[in-house]
Length: 513
Ligand code: NOJ
Image 1 (cartoon, rainbow, N blue to C red):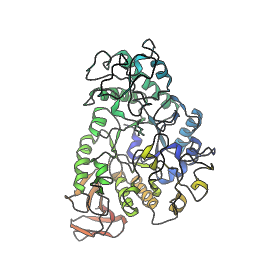
Image 2: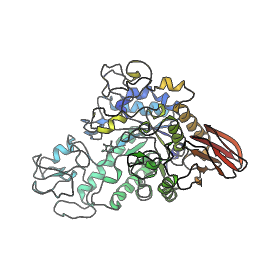
Image 3: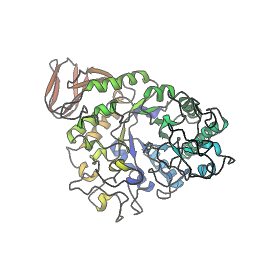
Image 4: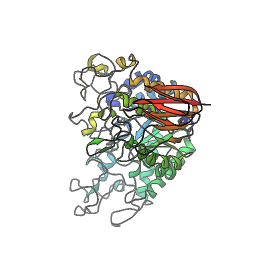
């Protein structure tokens, strides 16, 4: 287990929207290098960088054309190495985004594979044996390449699925078992890409659609086996390299597949969803909504079993948002967001902060889709730095996605100087986390008070007890906490005389004796 994960707090950077230094309207690696001190000042000591590889950008770079080349719009491989070096000097680790399940249909592997079954890479992708065969349970592209056969895609039509084989073989004429030499060669190709970037100085990978490798693998048995093999490679040759999975099933991802961390994504009715974005009959019923309609027990039931089962093996990664998810500002307001972040950064595991969330950037509704973003484009608008042109993102007259033009749009500049800002809470809580091992990834976690449809929620992290009341009403509960010190508060709240009293929308962190 990479030791640095114990106190890691990640910042997700969507490179095209972070900081543009060459005036072409798109962010670049030099821009990230120039903002490393900003990341450090936030208290983040690790970065997850969305794909930076050469790509036609039909899916924002998740359609890779060349895994070993930085997209020219971001810079060069040398710039990536400089980024690793500069980040390391500042104590910041960098995880790249690994896209193992599919490539762009412009990748040279695919250009070869689509020609004919005689191509040396014919087995790198999943093709049927005839253009007339396309079983409807699979997503095939039909009749569009010289080779007689249809190919499977993973996500958009431009993303042919790489061939790691099938676990349950239902069509033996075209489905290969996972131990077929062509499937094993795909795994080797993946390892080769990982080694390439680790050798250049990357600190690991966020793994896109990590559960998607082997097809017809309902229980993910064969997919987990591939990742365990990769983890063995890391343990042996790169023991400080870290892997975080886009999977959202901690038992499978951590215990079975060997990931160090697993994202708790915003999937309907999972732990993250119940905290923030859970919506029923058009009404937001997330726990942090001040309407008081959320149920903390939904979160507890979704979160605690996975935590208990994976404790000691790896970490659940809660996030504020990511590039696929509407920002929290779409659901709840400033005070609620502060409370939500204070909880995310005091739960066990390794938390992730999405760029711009620290200043309360908005989810831009109804803007045109850019680079295959569709409704996700609203969470991918350019970072808002200051009051200058394009809020400091770019000197271009036409940023590739429009910058928030609303009056009073938050910027780093105006939020940093506001003592009542989300930025202040984020930086305060992250600082407390770094200062106290009990609040970090491995610190003990225990639910102290959680009742159906009731506020507050109280939990213990080692010597700390944390209480939160997102509802608009004051609540109190009889609990005798041996308070030695109040460490942090948002709005009115206190723990004394055998009672915890939490004002409307409040947060309290105390240290016990
Ligand atoms: C998940 C990524 O987060 C998303 O942005 C991408 O479109 C799909 N995987 C396909 O790679």
